[in-house]
Length: 118
Image (cartoon, rainbow, N blue to C red; front, top):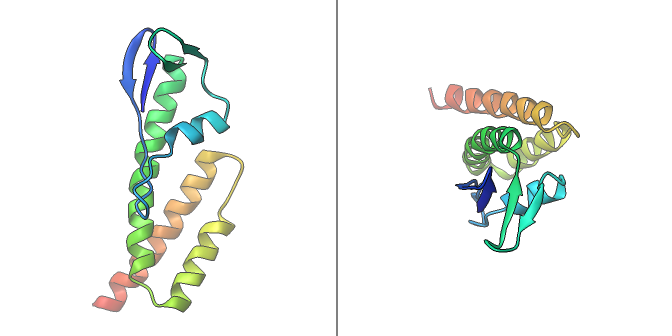
């Protein structure tokens, strides 16, 4: 999505690897992190430090989402259920805490799958 940061148009996005749906506007909006709307440009506005945080978070999250999908897709149905539950259990109201916990889970499952292939 295009967003206005200090009167400069910037882009930020995240895509669901399963559906191809972009969901950055919903995520940021649901967190109430937009700082207004520019009617002339028809764009959301955000502070530079808030944009920097979201840009970093979404880059890491996008990589995590693709890796999690790859792990999930490489498992049998029982493994998929266990992996999905582990990811759900890592949920947290603090996005960074949740993201770090889910990264650890993905790394553990990636490691298990690599060991199976060896």
